[in-house]
Image (cartoon, rainbow, N blue to C red; front, side):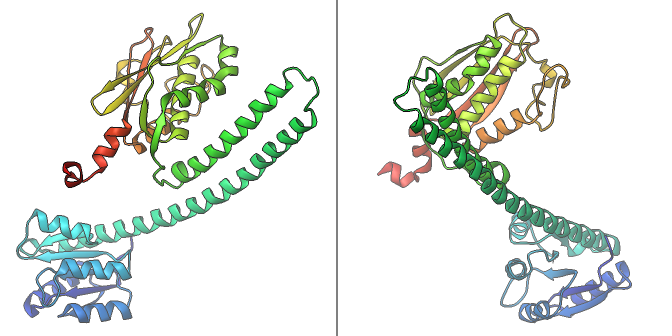
Length: 372
């Protein structure tokens, strides 16, 4: 990080203002140091000049330092701001950090070294924030472009599938009609998935939550995994109990698909088996996905949801190392939790905890509304 070129000291006390200017001069001998004795003058200077860092006092006339920091940050989102004060507590520091202050220094601890560290730290923090925001903006643009490019071939698949279905209507085509239906349904699901994943996975926008039927989700999972189950000679047992939870149907479809496929893939049994059950615990449903696979050693249970963590080589089991990471992210976005119980050779049980539809509405209602 390069040394700051211009610094601004804001303090209504002339003595404190000069002490801070001298301390900054000792810490950064080549920097130009400006002074302001009032918040309004400070705002005028910041409008006229781009400062590398601002050091301001908390107690000032007409406007305290926290309020001034918020207004300066509104105009310059990446301006490093350090708050100084002779009195203060943790509540003040917390309020300052929430309102755009980068760092905090008690006046009783001012030294050239402490000021230098605080300025360097604040400048680094704000520079990193700028880079992150720019990268996020680029990612959003990429996500929109990707979603747009994906939707066009999906629409073509849907359109030509329907044209083929219309062309063979009334003709005996055996299983072709059923295959066309599967193809059309798959294209529809893919279109929904592109919408949700572009908004949620790439853009980090919260998904739309509503009442979801677990039976409906399971019906989709069974239909989509039917070919893979046949290929693996596996068995998928759906829950016997009906459940309606608060979540996102598309995301939960992907979560359960991922857990079922993992149970079938990491499995050396003669007949891979995944059984899904559900139990009500207070205001939450807990979905259990149990398999008879190879299991996971205890020391790795806390690692499996981290990105790019693979417990086996690609030669043993193909995979990206992101499936469980995205599954956890999807569950957390639905106000839920996911964890795993497992032991080598005994299979694994993944638990997904989600609020009931009634519980979610009750939590969302303010206390006075519930009382009424």
